[in-house]
Length: 403
Ligand code: ARG
Image (cartoon, rainbow, N blue to C red; front, top):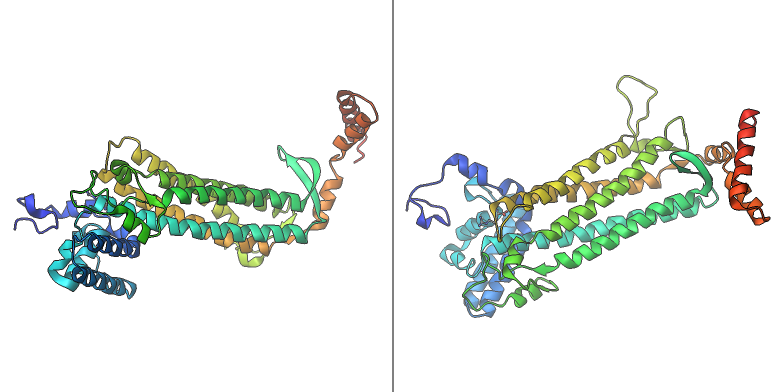
């Protein structure tokens, strides 16, 4: 044999070692190992159900795959670049466990529908975790709003004091954003929960398979209607990254306010010591590093979205190797959003509110000028005139230096 790769039959030489290294994705996609095994067991069950392999062969494959899973869980599995990606590494490990019959597992399947399946399985789980984290954060915000129901502070437009509002009103605005984020992810989940298995490389398979059977075993709502679409669709990932970007944008806006509000200039809040850091030179400093870094990490999640969109924009149907680049941005965004939401909830929970500073800020700056104009208008003056009268009173007070 001139090329010992799983696909080496038509090759006259081994691939160059640098090429192996360049093409390999196992360093990244081994995070999909558990999902790959879950998918493979379901695929083998379908092959047995359709009479393509025997029940005995299925039993051997299932036990072998579970043994591989055990090794991976125990950290004893050896992933190698020579086997390129998680799929071929696991197939090699399975061969080591059960011998030749391992070669039957890949019947009526390609790595193209296999990798698509793995990311569907992975993302539908992660999306549920993120929805959970969003709900936890919403609970904290609702709780905090209830605790500080009576606290009044200036509401701002253009970062200029505008009208008095309740702190609860402000917090609940963010709760509303995170509620929309959760709804968006729920819709995203419905797009994710469809099985691509059965599409094989792109055109389905000449075996009489039953894609609906695997879909049902794996808890999917259905299968893709078109096999070309099944292996080349990454829309659900783009949608996820877009949802992730919105979550980060909301966290970033909130972070920006926490940073401003904890400055001495505002002094509306104090972040708990457990969520701040000091300076290596200035002993008095207490820096809001957590919200700052969250604002910073927002950029990287936007980058993940743009990275995937750019990867996909020029791709002809169906699978192209470019698509291997989908995983790093996906995993990065999942990790970043989870970590950000998980730390934001306790950050808010432990926040100290300086109600007197907020109250004082409401008293300066003529925040009742709109109410005065409204009252005059209610008494019969046209609103435009009432606005002018109220504005002139503000100008008069400023001139007389009486606030
Ligand atoms: N490692 C590949 C990926 O992540 C798996 C699919 C490879 N398919 C292929 N025909 N080269 O996209």
